[in-house]
Structure formats: structure tokens, C-alpha cells
Length: 379
Image (cartoon, rainbow, N blue to C red; front, side, top):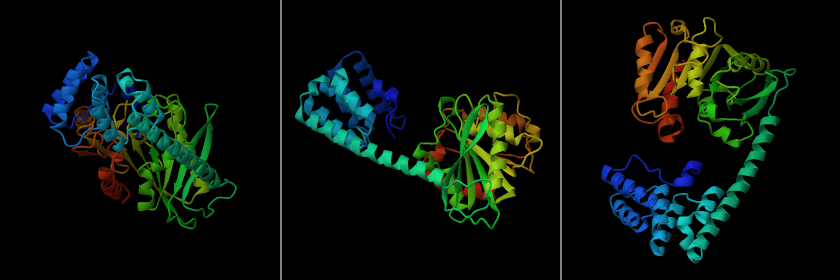
């Protein structure tokens, strides 16, 4: 993943997984950098690196900036090369930072530094070419795989198809993923997935090929299920817009016209904001969904109170929260569950010890978790 913009401007974020003595030295070095005490910062970085075998990219860059400003060119280049091996220089923003930041001005004429920047530039060019080709292939696939409503239940190749609904005077996109085992002659389970990050998304991002990397699509192949992926954004999403919630039912009607969906086996859930929105669907008295699920949700809706008594065993809701979730605090979510579990008899509250807010995006966690989780939900 590319460095966050905020990290480009400061490079003072460091992993909380390090030992306390390491943290203290890194914190001191950060303070030294801010005070322009570069040689003192360099000394602290050197001491810290003797205590930790695995150094993060950001730590190496910050340390290299101290070394460069203290005229220790050799050490600065050693640390920049180490950072490069860990992925530094995968974006133009990172390269620009190294080229323009005041702390690296002493390296501007250094041959090794110039060669390193050139290597980063070449890598970025190749990555941009790859991304362009990937995007072109993605946008061809999602259009080529579309089924017209006038020709329903056609056998289609596995993969992704793009559709739009029209509401609120705008075209709202959604993706349908067809698993490898789909047969148009047989009824097939369908799973809605409401993505997170809605309050930070200004536009529907359906043209981005990274969508296909969403972990939920692996569930489609594992359980031979159609996956329906509606897109949301800040002004039309799972936060305050009831029309976005209601649009899900329109999407369902459209999908049922094109694909052979088992109407008794339709599920809905999501992650983060999407998981929160799931509580609205799960608490409706009448529902087309057999069961619900939510990853890292906050059980508090901005569009009104949740009718917890409508979350029943007939249409159960399964949620998973990590104890180290930094977005929706575990204790806050657990408190809401404990206060309402007597009413919400269908709410199955599950916990994982570690994984943070985005645990489903961590391969070492998500693969087994998703298999076990959906084995229970889809039974």
C-alpha cells in the first residue's frame, strides 16, 4: 500500500508493536527532528535500531533524513536503500518527498541518491503501466459481462458485471460477481456486501480495478454464491441517506431479473459503515433476507434508532468485532450488545482478539475467518 499523504508530510508515524524502549528512543528522535537537532536525532535512531530487528519503512526514512541533515551520507543511503527494499518509492508522491524535502538537500548531488531515485522512478513507471492495463481490462470485463433484462438467466462466464440503478437523479453503480460454479439452470445463493469507508469517498469508485480484490468475492467462489456489491459515497451512502438504503431493494429486484437467484437464500451484510447499515436492514419487520452479517460495525444509526427487537432468530444477525478496533471501540460496541441482547434475540455477537478495524483485509486472518464465519451464516 502506498504511503498516506499525511505520512509524506511528516514521516513521524511509528509502529505500536515495537518494544517500549524502542518507542521511547523513536519518540525522542522525532522530537529532535522537529527541533532541528539532527545529530541528536541520528544518535537516537542508531540506538533504537540496535533494539529492533524489523524496522519499518517510515522509520528508515525519518532516520535517513536525520543522517542526511547531520552530513552522515553513508548512513543515510544505507537506510534509504533498506527502506527501498521494503517498498519505499512505489508512488510519485514518495519520490517527490525525497526530492523536495529540506532534510534531504545534502543528498541532492549524491550519485547513489540520484541512482536510487531513478530506480524508484522506473518502478513507478512500470507500476503505472500495469495499473493502466489492469484498469482497461477491468472496465472491459464489467461491461462485457452484463446481462440485459430482456434476456434473463443466460449462462455467463464467471467474473464481474456492472449495472446501474437510477435514483435521486443519479446513476448508482453496483457490481455482480458470478462464481465459477454458477449455472443459470439452478437457483443460486446471493450475498449483498455493503463496503466501508463511505464518509471518505466522494465518488463511486467502480472503475477502479482494486475492487476485485475485496475479500468478499472469495466467499462467492468458496460457497458458490453470487456477490452483489453496491457502491456508496459520502452524499449517497450508508450514513444518512435513506434513499441509499432503499436502493438496495431496487438492486435486488434487478438482479433477480437477470440471474437465477434462490429467493430463500439471500443474505446481506457489510464492513464498518456497511456493517452499521446492516443493522437497519436487520431490524426491519419484513425482509427478503434470510440472515445478516457485519464486520467491525458500530450499532448506532444516524437515520434513527435501531429496532433491536426485530433482530430475531428467524433472520439472525452475525457480527464480528476485534478487541483492538481503533475506529469503533470494542467496549462501546460490547456495551450496546449487552444492553440490547435480551431484545435482539437473533444477534450473534462474535469477537476476535486482534486484527484491528480492518481485520478482513489481513490475509493471515481473513481467509480462515471468512470460511468459518460464512459456513455458519449460510447453513
